[in-house]
Image (cartoon, rainbow, N blue to C red):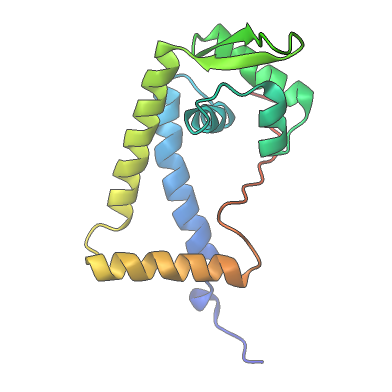
Length: 157
């Protein structure tokens, strides 16, 4: 097996690209006084308008009950969400996005669009399609599925 010189490794490039996109979202979230973990929860809620409960978030993010409870509690205190008791299952409290939370979701969506536009700035449409195909193939080669997201527990939020 041929040893590839360090400047040809993909890992540092991928890590740098991730840091750049992550930093763009972090700046947008900080302006809304949200942490990255809270932003992930708001993104989840944006894609699940049927008012999930905390158990759904625990399963989706592979987080413990205390971690999710803390994240949701802080989002509630900041006025992004509210809990309402499920009429069919009184033990379940459904999570509803408030107007402040809806504005947050719109801001996050706009930030994602702007970041992705910057990411492929100067690429032709064909190059953009190739870039996406290369990323998806690389993920597949590594045994990953772009639809499976595993998040670390973040308890210091």
